[in-house]
Amino acid sequence: MGHLSWIFVSTLLVNNFTLVMFLGLCSFFGVTGKIETAWRLGLANTFVLLLTAISAWFLNAYVLKQTPFLRTIAFIVVIASAVQIVEMAVKKYLPVLFRQLGIYLPLITTNCAILGLALFQTSRNYTLVEALVFAVGAGLGLTLALSLMASIRERTELTEPPMVARRMGLVLVIASCLSMAFMGFAGMGSAE
Amino acid sequence: MTTATAPVAAKSDAPAFDPGAPPPATLFADVWRGIGKENPVLVQFLGMCPTMAVTNILANGFAMGVATTFVLVGSGLFVSLFRKYVAHEVRITSYILIIATFVTLADMLLAATFPDISKALGPFIPLIVANCLLLGRAEAFAAKVKPVRAVADGLGMGLGFTLSLSALSSFREILGRGSLLGHPLFGPRFEPWVFLMMPPGGFLTLGIACLAVAYVIEWRKKHTPAPRRA
Image 1 (tube, rainbow over the protein chains, first blue to last red):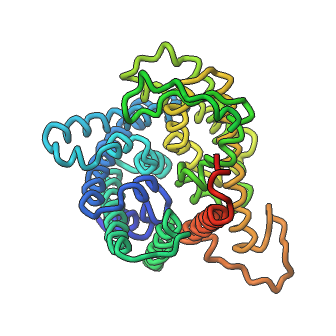
Image 2 (image 1 turned 90 degrees about the vertical axis):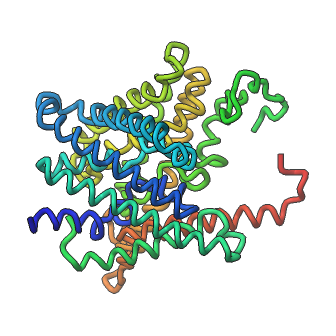
Image 3 (image 1 turned 180 degrees about the vertical axis):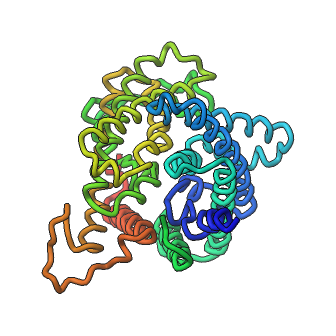
C-alpha cells in the first residue's frame, strides 16, 4: 500500500507531468486562459489517461511481447481511438463542455502526456494496479497544473505588462516560477 | 516572400477554418520560412515538450533536432505522396501512422548508432509522435502540395527546430554546467548556475528567448516606416 501511495504522490507532485517532466505543454499554454475550461480539460485528460493505461497494459502483456518494435505505432493508434470514444461521449452527454473545449479535445491525441504515460508505464514495468494509480496521479497532477496556471493567468489579464511580455514571454516566466515551486517537493523523495 | 504578387487562388474549396492550400513559392522560400519567419519554436510555439525537456545539454538538443528533422522530411514526403488517396475522414489517423512509422525508424537508428544519446533522450524520441509540429505541418502543408515542396518545407521546419533547440541548449549548458559539448569552458573557479539545468530553467530559458524575439519585433516595428513591410 505504501508503494502505491508513493507512486501516486510522486506523479502528482514530485514528478508532476507538466511542470517537472514537460509533458502536455501544448494544452498547458493553450487552454489555460480560463480556470473553468482548464480543470475540465484536465479531467477529460485524466479519463483518457486511465483508458490508455488499461489498454497499454493489456497490449504490453499480450500483444507487444512478440513485436516490441511496433510499440510506438500501437500505442498511438490506441490513444487515437480512446480520444475518439471520449469525444463522442462528451459530445453526446456534455454538449456544453464539448463546445468549450473545442479543438483541444481532439488534440488530446497529440498530448505528449498520454503517450508519455504509456511509455513510462512500459519502461518501469508497472502492474495493472500500479498503472491505474500512476494514471490517476498523472491526470490529477495535470489538472492541478492547468488550474494553477489558469488562475494565475486570470489575474494577469487585469494587469498591464510591458509590450515585449504581451505574447508568450510572461506566461513562460510564470510557468518557470510554478515549476520552481514544484521543485520544492523533490525533498519528499528522490526523483526517478 | 518572392511571389507576393499572386492573389492566392486557393480560397474556393476550403471551409472557414481551413487555411487552404499554401500560396506558391520558390523552394528556397519554402525552406527559409521554417528557419525565419515561421520558426516552429520561437514564433509558432509548436513542439514545446521536447524543446524544454531535452535542451539541458547541447548534444541532446541537437540530436533531438536532427531526429525531428528526419521525421519531418520523411512524413512530409509520404503524406504528400498519398495526399490524393487518403479519405478526408481518416486523414489524421493516417498522418499519425505515417509519422509513427518514421519515429520508430528514427528511434532504432539512433539506438543503433548513438546508444548514449538514445539513452539520455529516453522516451522523448518516441514522444516525437506527439509533437504537434509534425501533425501541424502534415495537415497544413504537406497534404496540400507536391512532394518536392513538402520535403523542402519539412527540411526548413526541421532546420529551424534544430537551430532553436541548439541555441537554447547551448545557453543552458554553458551557464548551467560551464561546458559546451562536454568540454569545460571556464576555469575551476566557475560556479555553475545549476538552476538552468533543472526544469524551471527550461521554462525560463525559453521565456528569455521569447522576450528577446518580442523585443526585436517591437524594435523593428518602431524603426521601419510602415509601407516597407510587405
